[in-house]
Length: 68
Image (tube, rainbow, N blue to C red; front, top):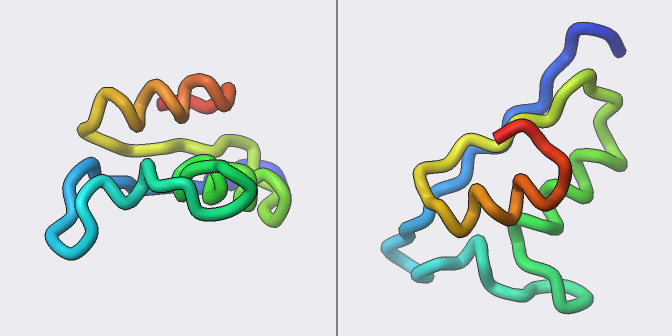
């Protein structure tokens, strides 16, 4: 689908489960990595954008060849 974007908002902090987006949840990958992988599989987007304030999460997204 042309001119479509998938935006993944991800926070570094969490009140209930601190740093939950970095926790390994499935096949030894983090929640953020799993979310990025699913977005690539499910959505036929022109761009996948990860929005975050956290440097570590930004680095994970950048390693996935995404626009951060």
